[in-house]
Length: 167
Image (cartoon, rainbow, N blue to C red; front, top):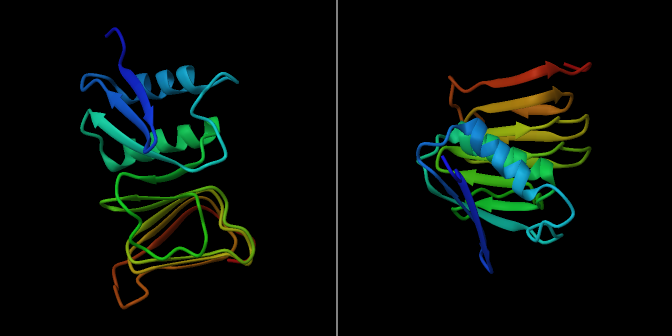
C-alpha cells in the first residue's frame, strides 16, 4: 500500500482519508509520522474538527485515532457530529454515534453530564465527577465520582482501569 493515510485541511478542520485496506496500526503509524514535528501545519491553539473518509471505522478505532491525534498535540474539538450533550465548558469532548469520548484528565471541580455512554481517556481526579444516563468507562484512575444509569437504567455500569484511594 503506497499511502494508507491522506490528510487534508480546510477551514472546517482536517479530513483523514484512510485506505479501506489499511490496518489500524498502519493508520496510527502514518498519522504520527505525518503530524509529529514542529513543521505540522495542523497544530494550533484553536480546536480542530476531525472527519474520517474511506475506511469504515469502528468506534474503538476512531477512539484510538483521536487519542493519537490528541497525544501529538492537536486540540480536537469534536468528531463529525455536533455535540448533543451538555458538557460543562470542557473542550476535549468528542461525539460519536455510540457515545462520547473525553480525552484528558478531569480535574477537581470539572464535571461531565452525558445523555449517553462515555469513555474517559484519562483520570477522574478527586473532586471531579462524571454522570451518565448510559455506561462510563475510565481508562485511568477513578478518584472522583462516577455514576452510570442516572435515570434508572439498571444494567448501566462504571468501569475504571484503576480504582482510586477513596473508592
